[in-house]
Image (cartoon, rainbow over all chains, first blue to last red; front, side):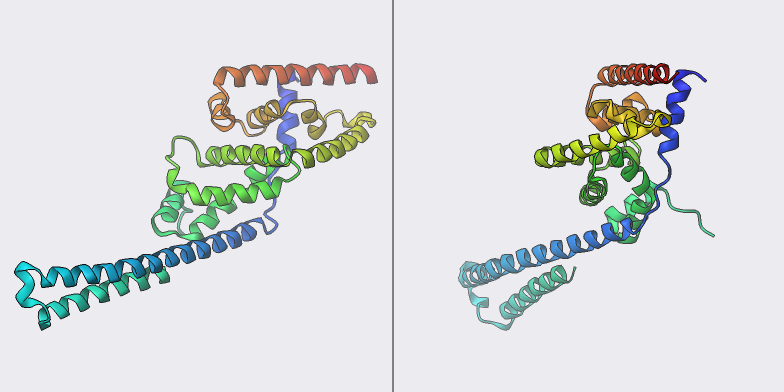
Length: 100
Length: 178
C-alpha cells in the first residue's frame, strides 16, 4: 500500500457517520427561541413605531383637512371615514406584525 | 413515495416561508459532517456545531449556491471555532494540556501508531483542518480554500507539509518498533 493510500485509509476509517443523539432537537429548540425573540423585537418595534407615527399622522391629516382644498370637507363624514379607515389599517398592520 | 427534497429546495423553503421543518431536515442531513469535522479540531465540538447551525439559519438568505451547502456550513463551523478559540484562549490552553496528556498515554502503546487524534496532534491547526477536509471528506483544494480563507497555493503547501510530517513521524515510529 502506498503512503498516500495509507493516509487515506487512516482518515477515512476515523470519520464515520455520527449518530444524531438529540443534536438536531437541541438546535431546533434554539431556533424556536431565536424566532420568538425576533417576533418580540419586531412587535415592540412596530408598537413603538405606531405609537409615534399614528398621532403624527393624525395631526398631519387634521392639518391637511383644515387647509385649502379640503377645508370644506373638514369635520364632515367623508374625512372622518378616511381617518377611521387609515387608523384601522395601521392597527391591522400592527396586529399582523405582532402575530407573525 | 416522494423523493427527498434537495438541499436547494429545502433552503428555498426556509428562506421563502421560514419553514422550520425544512431547516430541521438540513440539520439532520449535515450534522454528522459538521460535528465530525469539529470533533477533530476542538473539545467544544457540539457547542460550536450548534452555533454553526444557528448562524446558518440566520444567514441562509446569503447562501448563493456558489459552493455545496455542506462546504458553506463547514466554512461557518471553521470560523466559529476560530472565533470561539480566540475568546477562550486561556481555557484552550488547559484543554490542550489535557489532550496532550491523553496523547502521551497513547504514545506509549506501540499498536496505536495509526491513531488519527494522535496523528492530528502533530499538525498545526490549519494543517489539521486541511488534511481532514482533503483526506476524510474528499474536498478539493478550492473548497478547502473557501473554508479556511487561505489561498489555494497555501492550501497545497500546507497539505504537502502536513503529509510529509505525518509520513516522516509514522515511518520513524515504525522503525523504532522494528
